[in-house]
Amino acid sequence: MSIPAEAFAEAYAMALPLGSLVRHRGNWHVLVGDDNKPTDLLVLEGADKGRLFNVNSNMAKSFAVVAPFGWYPAIESPQEATSEGNTTVALTLTDQGIRIIGGRLDHGDVEYQAYRIDGTLDSAYSSYGPGLRFASWTVELFHSKRPFQSMGKLFSVTASEDTRR
Image (tube, rainbow, N blue to C red; front, side, top):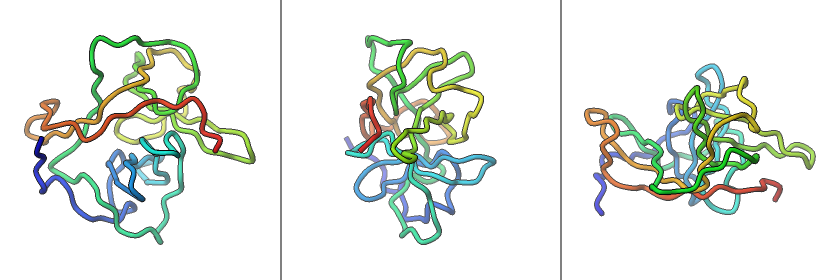
């Protein structure tokens, strides 16, 4: 599979819009935050998947998916979904749309937060809230002129039960 090189650029995470995909320290992350301000990177793969890490102005430039390209989550059918559990990076389908759960390690306890695909915090949604959770999903690349027409799979995501590492 070939993906157009123009879909990617080196950029500072702080300068990207919420919901951007960023490859930082060898793993893919989604840029998340509140009030259109990027505050965290939600790790989507690797040993720290599901964890939230602060974004700061001292971060080096990272490889990122940039406009007019974007990404969307996809599930491979058929797949069993569950409505139980507090699983980070599971793709959760709710009556309000798709949510991804991330966890922040705080003094040994994990504080879970839900994010929309556009990267905005959904403080009203409980990480134990209703919805179907898919443990495995893929991240697909698209061009803005053809949303939801995949140009190829960037990577696969597999949910994690625990963010305490």
